[in-house]
Image (cartoon, rainbow, N blue to C red; front, side, top):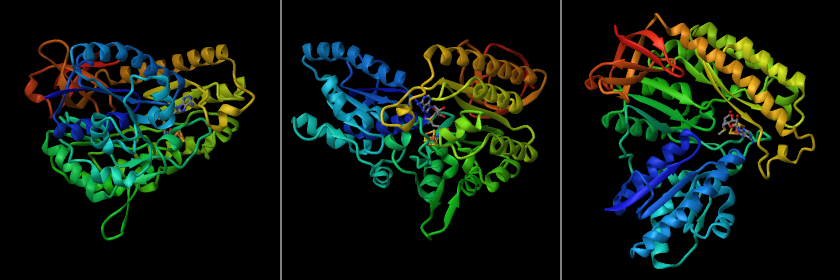
Amino acid sequence: MKKLFIKTYGCQMNAYDSARMADLLAPLGFAGTEAPAGADMVILNTCHIRERATEKVYSELGRLRELKDEKAKSGGRMIVAVAGCTGQAEGEEIIARAPVVDLVVGPQSYHRLPEMIARIARGQGERVEADFPALEKFDSLPEAVSDTGVSAFLTVQEGCDKFCTFCVVPYTRGPEHSRAPEKILAEARLLSARGAREIVLLGQNVNAYRGTDAKGAAWSLARLIEKLAGIKEILRIRYTTSHPRDMGEDLIDAHAGVAKLMPFLHLPVQSGSDTILEAMNRRHSAADYRRLIDDIRDKRPDMAFSSDFIVGFPGESDPDFEATLQLVRDVGYAQCFSFKYSPRPGTPAAAQKKQVAESVKTARLEILQKLLLAQQDQANNAAIGLTLDVLFEKPGRRAGQIVGRTPYLQPVHVDAPLSLIGSIRPVHIEARTANSLKGRLA
Ligand code: SAM
Ligand code: SF4
């Protein structure tokens, strides 16, 4: 067997793509390995969303150069591939800047890896594939065979047509495309036959999912979820990431009507200021977002929310930032991600004159994160004393301990036998650590 090392950066969609790349290369004799040293093939599945993410890729390529030299000294060959969004955005530039790289492949063309590897072996042909043949990719991938784990990702939708002014995704992942429902259902059945008990439906704008079945009928995400809930072995369903503008009535209703759909929603708002939301091209106001949260809580009162925030978007004033803090206080989040605005080449916001000073971004991020952390603590504290259903996913770090998640996505550590992994049990929550809960089987 040849050794394959894949390093994944960024979002869950990249994690899914990495697993599919491993599936794709398995028939060529590649088996996964835990470290890059000595590997025959190394794939960096990259993220381009913020500058830091891209920098990390170049420093990793620097380290790989030495390992590639060592492999060559022992008479072997290490093929180094850059996949993912940095590959899409900077294909030729990567080859020029990092000669260690043998090939570059974008997120919509990784199904062509086997033929690219063959070309490299023959020492000929293009080394960059960065088209958007989205339809083609899913049709050419093998059936999922990777070890799925108890919770498995399943990409249902890709790309984005929204063009928020700060974001590279529409350029790196291409236009919105939804997979056919039959294909998704078949993949879900396969995953569940391999032991998956939770399916996490993935898409850059997953709730914009609009699939078309063989009869030409349109499927919304809600309809897809209802159908998936009919698969006996699947115990839980989640989806991410949603856009507030695509939160349809039927999807909100599904949270009340479909028991397997978990009461946790990642619904990024980015800012609480209407001026900034408009400049970001988010195409909704802070009031629209608050109303949406209220509508969802009306139907599913225990819904836990999370969001992404950007501080220091060009032109963000102190009152704009205060509006973000106020929105956070009003909504009350279970957990969130927050970032300093990072200008991305080619996006409209990067060209704006009124950039916010780095020191201001740092100060605002600190204030926001303190508030978000306090809300997360509050949500975790509120769980203490309750009995919650936990789906056990894997062994804990300590012997005799297993780890699972509550419906609200909180990790829970419990002393219990490994045989419970893959099943749901009621757990009495007794305490918490910084980021997780502790409990005992009820
Ligand atoms: N589609 C999702 C949405 O509309 O919210 C988000 C996708 S993006 C991969 C994840 C998060 O990265 C965004 O929600 C945003 O908060 C953050 N992000 C994107 N571009 C950014 C930038 N230029 N600077 C800082 N954060 C950024
Ligand atoms: Fe990026 Fe906006 Fe599309 Fe989300 S909706 S992927 S933030 S452009």
